[in-house]
Image (cartoon, rainbow, N blue to C red; front, side, top):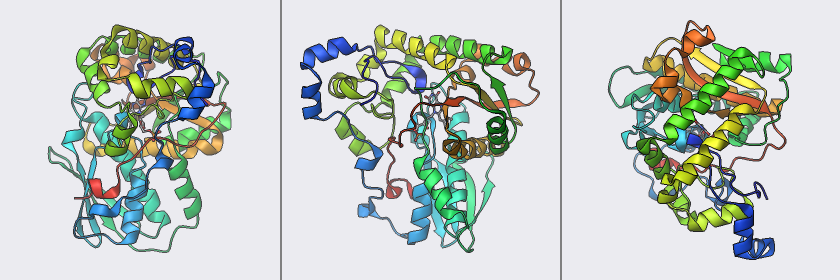
Length: 384
Ligand SMILES: Cc1cc2nc3c(=O)[nH]c(=O)nc-3n(C[C@H](O)[C@H](O)[C@H](O)COP(=O)(O)O)c2cc1C
């Protein structure tokens, strides 16, 4: 059982669940009762990987489906999974943005949506190469819903296929359990190599403090915004049946609310809980703790805000994430500093960076590296 000290939740938007362990245990009459009732909710492993019950024509062949299944395991903001895929022919796919999955309150310009689609494309490319379907990806600029065209080639499966697919399947974001330990220089070099254009700011440096303080300030600002809080509430799936039917968003499991606290929130929490002052306050406190933990911050840079640049940053972000488990390092994007105008302004100048900052995440060695639990929609739900 994890996070049994109650009040544990930490997640996108970094709101924390205002629930004390003693309070919950008292009400339940002890852990034995909880064990009897089941300590955890719905995890990825509890769901069928590919629900083929409603396959629309033309049904892609099995290998394209496999590649799409891996692509969909990508990281996305609030686990919104803002992708749709149109299959135009046997060797041509089009990636579309799903405008119903936008986050207008925290991401009005679809910046993070594009980063999420970039992450999807990286998984697609890596899984495609591993499974003998190399992908030639071309971004589409403009205001169209079409975001990239994908030409599928044919080749022998990559020599490291098993390792690649394993890395994609086991990748996850972790938000708690970071050690305040310096990251070894060879690990820093490996992370920077995966992330491409990027900077690493070690714990204790001036820039590290600046990002920590800016993140905390941004979380305070965002917690006070009803629109951002409402949007967050709309992406949290407190109930198990909602997790099963929607298969997206943030769940108690992915928010790392385990044990008694998890049992409690799955039964009692609603969107209204997320709007309460207590929930917002605890969220800021969690963000303070999180932003102060770990070995450093990684900042991914790029050139401006074209789709190509954002998709590229999203791809590098996912590539970085895929490389981390092997190093024993976990990553936690904390993007509020880029979402709030007041903390966003002048960030490059304060860090002495001449390029555009596209993404930032804290990284660190962790005590435990659990398997992924976030859920995904089946392929047929995003294939049009
Ligand atoms: C553009 C983008 C922004 C994100 N911002 C945050 C964030 O601010 N806080 C956070 O805890 N996670 C953030 N995430 C991580 C997602 O919440 C996470 O990928 C999603 O819930 C799925 O979980 P998984 O990556 O473990 O599969 C972000 C991810 C992306 C792609």
